[in-house]
Length: 370
Image (cartoon, rainbow, N blue to C red; front, side, top):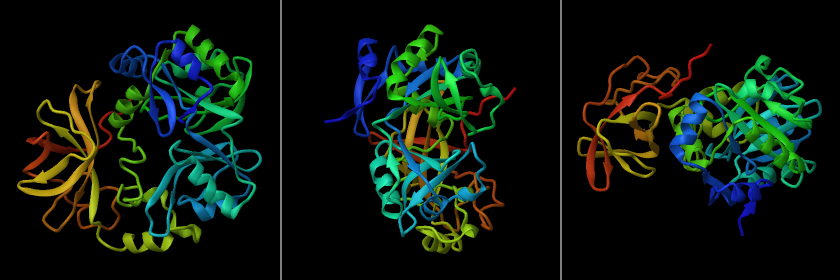
């Protein structure tokens, strides 16, 4: 049976359409994906992200051995994006790693949380998954911080990106991080299971729009953010996806380091690209990408962008000497780095028909900073 977050009954009573996702029952939408998407882009929306796994890891050594980034650089109250890989360098999961007053808090995807915790426990028996104690909410949008600031004893708007701090929010003890998965400013809130309904209802009374998985997906695609099982998986390495900055080879040994180092020293065999469909057709995961008559890759994520008013997608394509890639800043020492041309005859196959596409710089959408 799928798991339920502490907010399950509130979602059902609020009229949300529920679906199974990553082994959890979660709302896919309330009033509609477009309405919820636009609420986050223009005002403020909130998401139940109680499926995300919170893993306590007490020591730095364990985190360093099992993740690709350098957690020794974290100051107390700060966080970083990182990945956990297997020995072949393939991605087990992408993670957020926070350094707290005592130890580390690792946030894993719901579909992988128990697997990730198992890897930590093999090296550190005190590692603990916290589903029985705590849950998470995300409040996102240009008005998110002003809403939270009115009911929090800390000025979240003064936080740096991924800074995390213990706060009192609506009178409930919480950990609040300035972070999110929408391309907008906002916060992710870690709180006791028993306080989840109270804070959700308080946010509703402040006019915050409840949102589901549907708009969370369109928002993250517009912001070109990866989703495990799509851009990242056991079929891809961090370097395939262009995450060179999150793999720190200088910190010492970690699982997958040797394989990733070998890959780094070679020319990349494939590349994650962003593209627009030049006609009104929506690309979906698994749809094939062609250069002329030659199949060269596949879509990992795609949607019709409500903000941009056009279909966009991400996907992996093969690279060889004749290919010239536009978005190559993340490939160090690559002969493709100096090129700034697009493929001339790129297509995506959608339901048996070829639609022309154009490679574009990611992210597709970037918020205006004030």
